[in-house]
Length: 100
Image (spheres, rainbow, N blue to C red):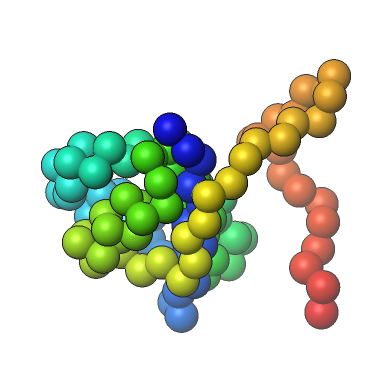
C-alpha cells in the first residue's frame, strides 16, 4: 500500500464532526477501494486540511473523494522520511508562523 496525501482548502472553517460524519457514512466506499484513513493536519484557522491515507494508489483515493463528495484540491503519492534518532511528537504545537 502507498501513502497518499490529500490537500483540502475551504472558504469557511471546517467542522471536523461534519467531515467525520461524511466519512463514516461512506465507509463502504473506502473499503471498496481499499483506502484507509491514517491522519489529518488541520490549520489553526480551519480552512486547510492535509489528510494522509493508505491506498493501492492515488487514483483509488481520488475515486473515493469524488464518490463521497469530499473536496480534494491536490492528491499525490508520498513517502515518509523520519528524523533519525529523534522522537517527534505529532501532538506538539508548532511555533512556526506562516510567511506573510
